[in-house]
Length: 356
Image 1: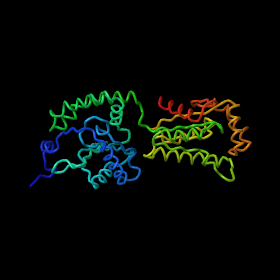
Image 2 (image 1 turned 60 degrees about the horizontal axis):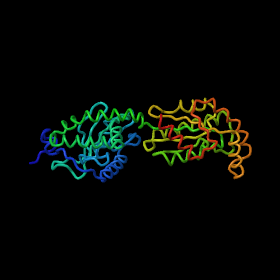
Image 3 (image 1 turned 90 degrees about the vertical axis):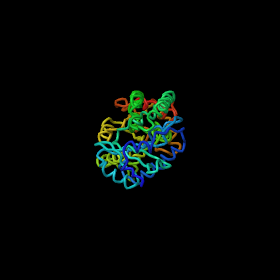
Image 4 (image 1 turned 180 degrees about the horizontal axis):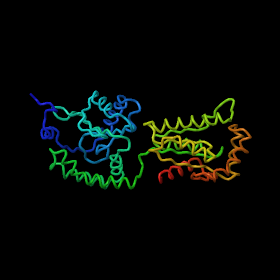
């Protein structure tokens, strides 16, 4: 009678599941995508902050074990034991666990590897060194080629010793993970773009372009919360609008789908910016504060065109011009848009964000 996997010794398991290196296959991306969609369906809502394809199958062109590695980062405070139960109920086998990490596999059978094989790494949010290593090798193909050569050199020596194989690669992985962290900084944090400026400078148009240009991006406009009839500015309505804006922003900051949140509003006073930021969960978020400004003549020309086009009312000119000098006092990056198109404004914002 064939032994079950739980009855096999480590040596027997290594013999049944040897190290195999295969040419890169595009179908690995499909395997990952399908498995990610399944995981999103079975995990409790709000559990996963990010699900990522990691490991060598996520690195283009190099040879890899035909095993798709998946990293799940769960929200702080998540009960990993509950997540483990859900995964095990859906075909995953827990292979190891510690206080803050768990490892699972799927596709290991008493007959050997199944057609599709997966490793799953369950971590708390921010424990994601694999993302740095993956992206560094994808962006530095010479290092990826060296990694492939190292794996080929180790393959036969450790064909039946998975732990030894992993340990022998360790120094290389640690070295280039460290290099990636130096180069990328906090690349994997969310980004919040707070874009202020007087009426008529092009905040909304630039924000819409950012939404199309940035990956996993949502665009939000504070004026949506002021779209009232009758329009009344009182202490009550001002506080209500701020609260609604902060609830909306926090919901998107906590949402696993979006990485970039673009928010535009007039934001002509430092206390408005400070109050909004103080109410947001920004522990793992980089914030870019931008004020779009221009000359009085340029602003007047833009607003007059909007009035002719029926977009704005005539009283907007005096109000907007009165706001313009206030932005010099703010703790924000200023972009003079007097002679810039909306596309150029968006490009400058993206370049600035990349230096954070």
